[in-house]
Length: 243
Image 1 (cartoon, helix red, strand yellow):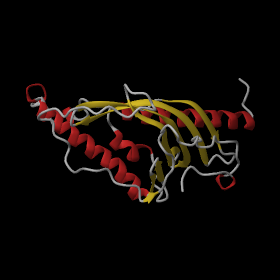
Image 2: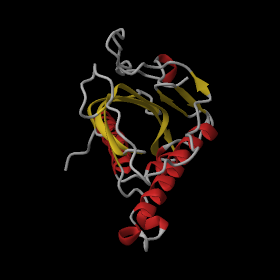
Image 3: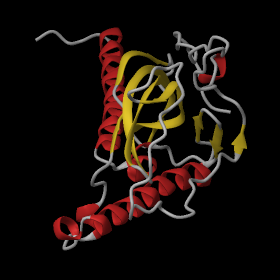
Image 4: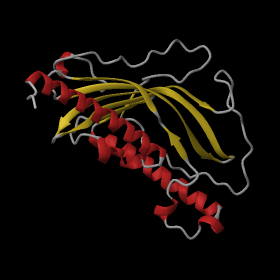
């Protein structure tokens, strides 16, 4: 059997890196769909202190802030699950907190149309994906569904023999109630008797707040997507999806 030359080995290594990076984003998408958002930081993010997460309204900068955001998502899911369990005691009353976690909720975050570039030095990588999904919130009127269209863009870093998220940017162009046109006001529904909100709970706010991207409104200026990655040799020679 012919021995592969160094250039061929390098090409195979880069192809494997792209596969691993695509799988990371696919696994995150799956975790969201089964209401496991709380595990995203521990499973996929670098242990570096300079990690960050960017959303439409700002950045969570630093390990503590990023971890706190995903912990907050887990707390929100637990509170909503407990409320739904209280509403349906005959069907759900005997279930444990773990068994009832995420019941009646959904978040679809499918990612596609990927563009992935691995640095020439093999130490970092970049990728961007289209996101076309939907989610459902428990509101005083009952479950309300929303469309989401936007982008996930990320910088990855090679750490302890595997690829890890370094900077993740998740921004939406469209975030609008299902069943209404994007230029229409969301429908107002009457509250359901006995359906309580989840109290005063609020997700942690970004510790670096700023307007990253406006959600669509009829006279909004055109919103540009995050830039696509291009081939690069070292991270210092390219742009960052973080701050």
